[in-house]
Image (tube, rainbow, N blue to C red; front, side, top):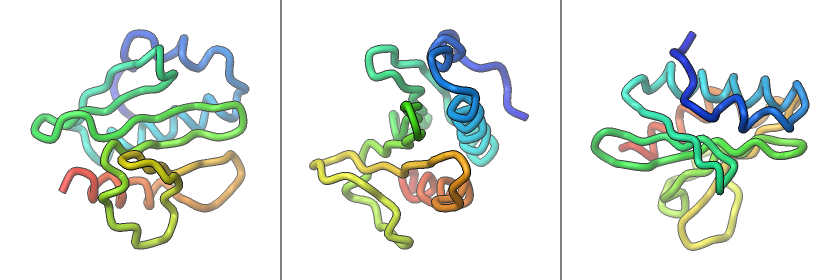
Amino acid sequence: MTGAAPSGFEELLEDHCASISALTRHLRDAILTARPELTERVYRGWHGLGFHHPERGYIAAVFPRADSVSVGFEHGADLPDPHGLLEGTGKRLRYLRFKPDESAPTPEHLVEYLDLAIA
């Protein structure tokens, strides 16, 4: 189990259904368990929870949405995509989209892509 969530995290989830809130918490836990050196910050304007690496800076964020939770990678366009799971067409951002009750991508995929973003 990870530590206390940052200020504003519960408010970020309050308008979401139970399954999206639970999935968001699960992805947060997976990220912080794999990379405990990351710090978190709620971005109210982006409606997301950002993760910062001590050396690499801002690397990713979790964005709860109405029917899914996206994990966006700040420099995702430059990342290898070994499983063909990254979505998006922008110049920088790519994301993994998680939906309740769907098997791919998995939290293991998330950790793998997180490691690629930090490398």
